[in-house]
Image (cartoon, rainbow, N blue to C red; front, side):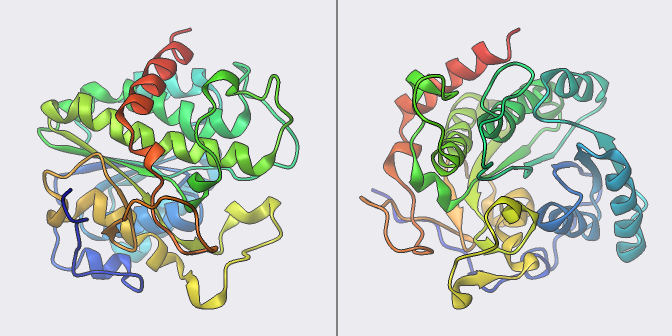
Length: 307
């Protein structure tokens, strides 16, 4: 087996470190969930390197304010906002139908975590799975022509060490039978995000579209609104610029040219582990890199967005 891919960057590297000397002039990017936290920093970093960046968010007013602030701090006037509610496939289709021209970078960053009560999307999906996975799956499919037209595009799927909490339970994706659990639901959705990267890279790399997934690490953001804050030990926590560094590495670094279907953390490819360890120990579960799982989930995703 090949050794995991390493880069000169690591746990403490920031987005500015990763993009030092990189020009994204002439490139277009979409970042979901870009009104706060990692999404805002990812968008800012890409804009600072010269990319045209669209902030895709459920609250377009807040996204527009964020776009203005990014333009102010980076001097890049090519930052804008568009409405996108990943939990609603009608909203996703409206976004993709309105897109014109090529797209070089798609960062599937938005996510929700550990909802205390079972909730569902308008289509009946469990809300974490429907938002974190199905919405992004539909978005990538709808934007496929634009990504293929770029002549070399990248999709970044933001996952989590939470994938270690659950594989995808194909026979009961939406908690119709098993008791709802906030963390297993979150874990399932984050596993699905990695399996998407594996499946997309197998199918779309021939069109010049490479896809990778990542764990950003433990960062205090709005993601923890239902959990009472971070529980990770202080020495294992990251700042927002450090947390977004791996996303930006996968989205734009020349070091990742031609690389796809892999899972990264701390700006390096993660080792496969046989069981989950202590909180913050990292690693990637073998079931999220399994091609049969990826193929089955891909077929399931196509069925879920076909309506």
